Amino acid sequence: MNTSENNLDLFPTASIPKFQESETLYSWCGRFHQLSCNTSERNTSRQLFKHPSAGFRPDFPTPVGHIHSKSKGHFESLEEFITNRTMFGFYRPFLPLTRANALATAIESGTYQHVNQQLGLPASLPELSNLLKACATCLEEDFTNFSFSWWRMRNQWPSTLVCIQHQQPLIYVRSQFRHDTLKDWILPCRIQSSEFWQDFSVSETMIYRMSEITNWGHAIGSESNIFLDTTKLRYCYLLKAKERGFVAMDGSVKLINFRNAFLEWIGNCVQLPTLNFAKQIQDSNAGFIGQLIRQYPGIRHPLKHILMIAFLFSEPHDFFELYEYVSSIYNLEGDRQLRKKLKNIQDTLVNLVSNENRSVNSAAAELGVSVTQAIKLLKKTQTPYQKRPRILGSEKEMDLSKALFAGEDRARICQKLNIRKSFIKDYLAANPILKSEWEKKHKIKLIQRYREKFLNILKANPGMPVKKLKGIRGNGVQWLQRHDKKWLENNLPNLKNQH
Ligand SMILES: [Zn+2]
Picture (cartoon, rainbow, N blue to C red):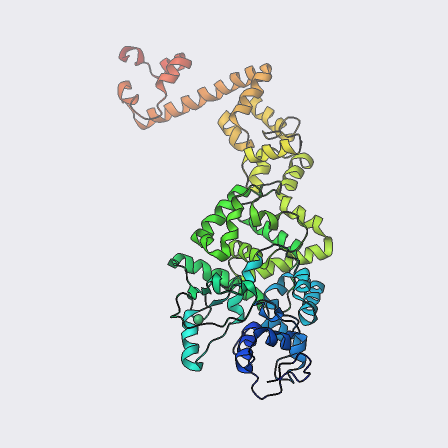
């Protein structure tokens, strides 16, 4: 094969390798080089990319436009080619449309530096998209069926930790074999080459979590029309965190609870090299959690988003539904309305207490928060409040006063008017005339009640000796002896003798 850079006919021979199922461009280049009989990889890279080493980047061998235009229709459309054969498909859902288009253009015609500029992820987990990963079972099947294997695109996604088909953890090319020096292409070896492959011992629980994260990456990556916006995602996380109880009533995040729940969820998976960065959530700035939930400008690595989403949401439709909801509010009313949604317990509480004259107790009960929490919040927002129900000056006070004046039973008043016992006590103490009136009338009522009860007992037990009568529940003899002695003596003439 002619390896001249200037050769316009890039693929003069019939032996252009076909792309294997979901094969990466990097992988294809490696196989192309083997078939080309070129002695130098650098020459092959020059031939394909007009650059001696640009082809050796596993994530973005660039620019791809040259190869694609020379493929004489052997490849899929340029758009599909970029999405399916480079790491573009992994990053795209987390980029705004204009940015995604600019990235695609950089991949088509720019350098690796241009691509990185458009990704906008300086120093954010750069190593993750250059790990070379494979499934051991797929590998063996490939070697059996084809005598060779290749790198599959989705296995290279940083969020892919297990093989979707075989549900087993991926194995990694050991770092000393990797492209670090960008000298050549590396193709998968047979699984028996244990010095080539590195695997990690993982428990069943870990595999479960790893599958979950992998599936989320695939679910989002498969949505071709989605361009997730950092700000909207932030509100999705916050609203969901609120639902999970990680947001205080003033809209602030309970970071410690959030962090602990995340650590418990991720478990030992945090030891995996790909997810190691998550350990930083224990730092004072809360690592990637802090980055995603605070209002920092800029784009974050998709793996961070995928982890956050996998932790907070249980089903993809949950997430997409909330995202759509947040988007519609954001597009219509802006981010102020969303901030309100986060704080709405606080706002509703303040409104109930200061505008609707509700007591803290009843407002807190309605919002399903504790009185202590509510008071803390009202103090913070400097809202004047009354802890007890507002009675003074209300219609309730008139009812209370009437009931007390009539000497009604206090327990019954509490029940009827929904007032605390202690409030009545304080109220009477503050109104001595009413108090003595209540005591007088209440006693009369009480005496009547005791007399009635006693007479009923007598009637039901004619001729029963007093000693036995005293054993009947609710007889009230002792009380009547203390408060209504004369009446008792008149109605029970032999009391004196028997006593
Ligand atoms: Zn597999």
